[in-house]
Image: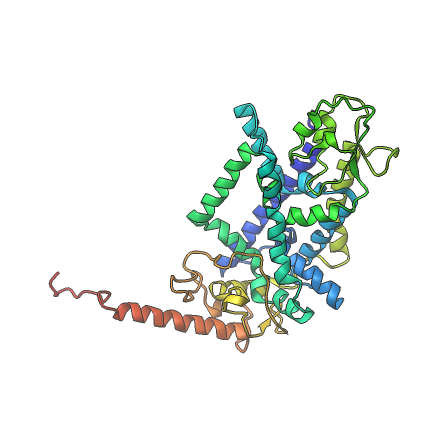
Length: 421
């Protein structure tokens, strides 16, 4: 019979797949100017953790929650809160990357008979890499004042960061595909390779989990010192050497507890002598938290983006010219409509890859090309005085100039019928 954790993992992996399919339908509808824009699943905001982190800092500094990706902020707060209260349960119970990583190393063990045991002199320093990556992001985000954060969050780049991320993977480059394949292969041989060494999100949650009252506790008098708990831990924590496992690497996966042959030697508790938090109870709590929170947030009106379907379509029409504010492009120094209503707001964010765009949306020299079939008049209800209309017209003018240069370039002129070969 599947364990409670396996059932929760399967449930949320299924939810993520449904969100992914619905988002694919949404993006496809943006690409077809004649189609009605499909509903956008707000849960996709969970894949924009940097934007969500910036939204949280902006909220703390200004007192105004950002409305561009509200679901991302809600889920980010929930994930950090669960780490503070119940350790890194998100990583090993909900996160699809964690679930896939676990599947890969278990498949590797079935095929090879074992997983690689990384030497401590490599394992310990390598675990620090994810904290360095976290520090890198915090170094650039934390000094930003509230006004700059608001500019980033309301930018066209951030508004379309989810779409750009989708296009990055749907038109993935060979380099990116090689990196993903390498990470997957390493995960077959090494338990939780990405989670242990490279995930900055996990690093942040690990720091928060240090303050959690929930922890694995070892009863030394009942312990047989067999070491099975340490060998079962996917994060390579020396559980058999500790009284209370307060490591930032612990993901509350219950692997050590289930591997222990001595009754009562290992238990997940909030305090010594308290009633243990069983795997079934933990499963119920984590599932309830992540299923109920979106419903409550939606009921209170803080779940869906303020970018309207019309706003998404207008922005998609010039997506090739929407780049990170630090690299130029739309959003670098001009105001854009918010949600397609004609109100004005500044720009920004950082989540999607800078060059993510569908084929034909940008030339090798960085010049902009319209998406297939996109024209200003194909954006229903677009205000002709809107800056977006000006951007589209400018994009078409640049595209015409680019084609003219190609036609007039040496060796590119069309050959006449009576000219010799």
